[in-house]
Length: 106
Image (cartoon, rainbow, N blue to C red):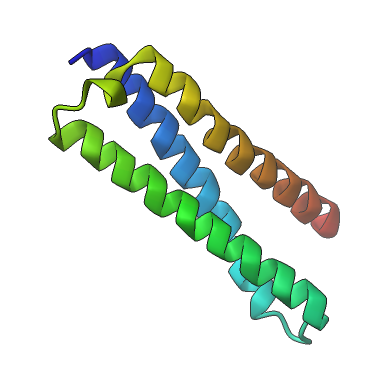
C-alpha cells in the first residue's frame, strides 16, 4: 500500500471527524438550550446532530479499515479526493457555527 496516500486519507478523515465533533457538540447544546428552541429548530438541530455523528463514525471506521486492512483503494490518491467532500461539508458547517458563536460573543 502507498503509505503517503494512506496517511493523507487518515489526515483528511481525522480532520473531518474533528470538525464533525465540534458540530455535534454545538447541535447537542442547541437541543439542551434553555429556554428551548422552537419545534422546527429543535428538529433541525437533531437532524444535523445525527448527520454530524454519522460523519464521525464514517471517518473513524474508514480510517480503521485503511490502517488494519489491505485495501489498496483506501490508500489511493483517488480515495483522498473522494474524502475531501465530507471534509468540505464538515468544515463548512464548522465555519458557519464558529461565525455564529463569534457573533454571539462579541
